[in-house]
Length: 94
Length: 280
Image 1 (cartoon, chains in turn brown, red):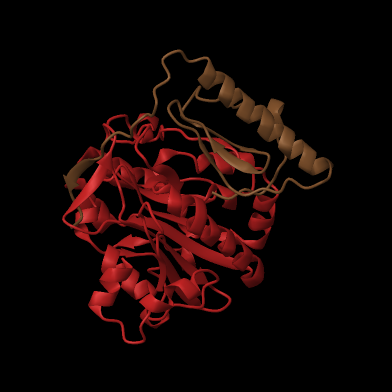
Image 2 (cartoon, helix red, strand yellow):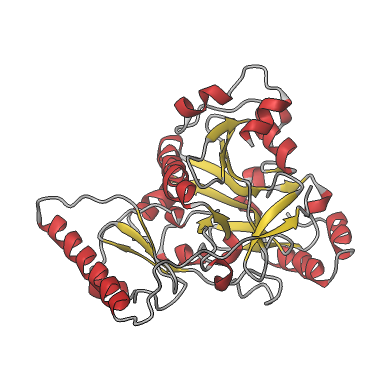
């Protein structure tokens, strides 16, 4: 689960926020795992004072703008979405 | 060399059609080269055997469990060329249910939605040398519910450190899996995907003839990671990751690149069972 490259720009990612539960991409050096109810967003990146830094910052901005627009457009947005409760089952291996 | 011996097939057959298919499939697609000295991991706990099947992918193999709805182990053989290629491959893929397993016996994407758990790779996507092999790691048959605090930080660092160790040591055999401690477990989604209490990663370097294991608590806050021997791993989980290696090579944990400082308080020269339980 580690980020190696900072290649894709916003147009190249093909990730539409909240549209599916499968897509995982590296955006601006950060890992993004799409979900219909939550997007995992993690990793480390450098926004260096050079053209590569600018490209990463643009990619992140474009992605985060998409997230904001999608959430903004949802009329019935809840205050917070609680996690589902896990079940408790006997350990089949014990 | 067949990964599924006749005796084990007979044992499996008692548990139904899926197991029979497993033996058949395992024979058909031989991926034993992914195991140390040509042997894939074996189970030492008969309770783990029902509803298991070996699934071979291009650069890793898993033992899938229909009871856990996740792998019990994932085996890889890393070498320098593979890791160099992996490091220049952008990380991308699409999580997907494994089409080799019938619906009703497998995990689905929906099981993980709002579960509070990350989809934690056992064979890491970051080890794979190209897009296609990377995509194979996104099958849910290679995924377990892992806490974000572990998956995104310490676990990711361990994965990354083992890639760097591969560059230094030339090649590594790595086996990764979940551990399930206690009489009851959490399970997520309609398919009841079992939540492991820890995840572990066993390493063998042929160049140094040494082995070692990381084990990390799968908890939401400040997960601790320890270094243990393969012998302890097998005693605690019922899985022998390197059945071809002699017992003497499994008694001690080699010097591993990550977690030494943090684990010194858990490591004792004379290991007692109490200490072992603490680590797991």
